Image (cartoon, rainbow, N blue to C red; front, side, top):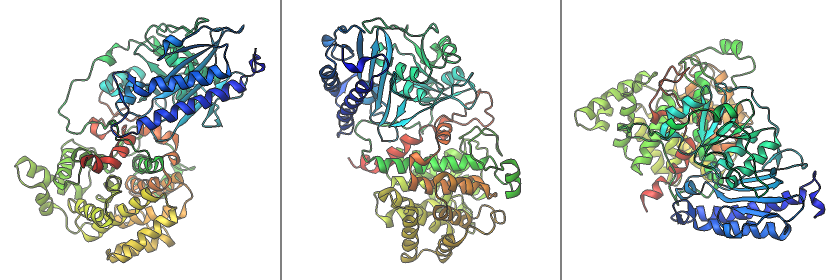
Length: 632
């Protein structure tokens, strides 16, 4: 017996299995990003066998007496030969079917059992949704669960609440309502791999993970081990703990749920059959965005900043909606420590993470750009009219005036862009164009500056044609474009935007606003509430004078006034600079699980699926590639 295999020390085992997972993940990641996407069909990728062979070789070389049980190379499976009956369970690519479709979130899964007990787990999501690798590891006697080299401690809830999240498969939105009703009062998020879902639960990102599609022992054993490392458990369809034979075989009855003993068995006992009944098809012209094979972004820094931009837009909007129109003094009374969490309620009685008009229009712009694959002002106008006719719960005067004309033009078959010109308020300097424009910067990040700036002005002319509004849009998208492309510091992004404005003849008022942002915030957020210059100055002031993404967004909201719009605009700019990881987990989770569905408790402003932000990460990635995809 190797000296490593006392019952309290698996340090060498853990090191070897982590190294094998990283090597296999590298192969799979390279294949994921190849032109045309990964090769294979159905539920088997060409690289699956190679990845499993690599893992087997590394483990066999280090631990020749251990048994081995893998998904792909079953003819090489063998029983354990050591006295402790150690056996490895390997899924080289858990979530292969989704991997082949271009989805992110598949994972390498490596588990070690000792006499049927999971004593080691390594899960490596090599192409996680944020573009990075996400590595989880734990072994008995080797300290706490680690995520990307950092120790994890978690506290389990006694019961599900509205603040909790349950992880389901990538098919969760095939029947959003059924899934939402089953996990209520919690919410759900979709992740392809059960191994990754269990790892995320172990790390504290959710309270439970569900698999309904006949998972096998090699799929869930590593995640099961990770749960053991933090005091959790994996349960079968009857609500009993999952067990394994000495040969590593396990049967969960087609369903397994990982989490705490207080929550997971109750979820396992539910009737999940309704989720397999697809929702009735609708005529929605703007569906949720899905990634496609070969269209992923390999540059993880660029992807992180684009995702940060959209998450920042949505987070600032939702955070600000909690206190919209309130004064500084009132906000401080209700939130003496700051408005720090996305919560249900607020001015519009929305659910946590739910967009208001600001980000619903930003979503329309994003979905229109993705659908068209190029800048089509008529299509954009039509998407805004779609929003106008959806009975939004909030709408500014200038927006309503312009979109009323656009909507009537579409009904009568006339030019909606010309209708916008005729009906829009020529004098308004409101922030209604700036609040929606951030997706255009992501879409046009590789476009010439002068082209992108003109696109931004054209979008403003649909509802806010005043030159100040047009140029506010222009300088804002140029700043975000520069941040996305370079990863520059806050000071560098500000200076670039200011220099660009001064050198290209931007309206003098906008140049003055940028200059003022270097010195002080807007002098009064309440007077002339909704003025575009307040929002723009605040965004650049927060960029320069706060030291983090969250501080800048929170500080924007704490000033009172048009808090949702000021928060959304500042959040988009700050997110483009600081990136995905700077967005607090609680904010990300509430945004990516926000489904304001009719019929759910505590949903007072139900909205159609195109206005949900749950696909924000996919939207950002597809926007980055939309022009390239159109031209190929």
